Image (tube, rainbow, N blue to C red; front, side, top):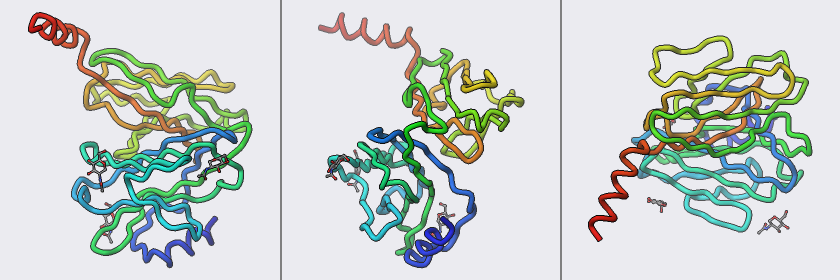
Length: 232
Ligand SMILES: *[C@@H]1O[C@H](CO)[C@@H](O)[C@H](O)[C@H]1NC(C)=O
Ligand SMILES: *[C@@H]1O[C@H](CO)[C@@H](O)[C@H](O)[C@H]1NC(C)=O
Ligand SMILES: *[C@@H]1O[C@H](CO)[C@@H](O)[C@H](O)[C@H]1NC(C)=O
């Protein structure tokens, strides 16, 4: 893995690389995964790419193929990569890349594992709730990880909540309960609109991405539809 990464470094002329411990995502054969690639807001107009770490060419954002979509969301300062129908031979290193000052800058690196029994997975990779609601996410892990720290992290700032510590400085609190066998549950209470975004369940270097969408509270949604009806 080190050699592949180092080779890629030279090819791209990457200037900064802070962490050699590669995040790993595990997916079942034939399965799919969506990965968020966050970038600094100031790079919104720049070109973005998805690189598979092989000699295959980079994929630009807003590319859609049979088994791959790379879509930019400039309003959220991220692009998403969806890989479908994953096969064993697609395991390997992948990179989110942003072109800055004529150079290619790796913003996120991950190692993809394709395995019939993924070591980490989620019940649902997309959850939603209204403002003020609570939301639960169940994350599954294989027994090899049962004694390791379970975490729930936000991609945008890599801020993590772990099972022992609850950050009370946040008005939206996060609690993690671990069954000690095969899964842990993340409870986010009092959702705020700003909690929307991409998170990941984490144990060891394993990650499982989850998208959280927080919508305006039910009262204002109802109000909006009432206004809509009376205006007809
Ligand atoms: C998409 O994945 C399927 C299953 O692996 C494969 O048979 C097909 O050739 C792939 N399509 C493309 C365009 O690569
Ligand atoms: C990609 O699509 C998004 C909307 O889906 C658009 O806002 C953005 O400008 C597009 N980017 C490029 C490089 O075409
Ligand atoms: C690469 O991106 C990081 C994070 O946005 C930034 O701090 C750094 O200056 C960039 N490097 C180059 C060479 O532009």
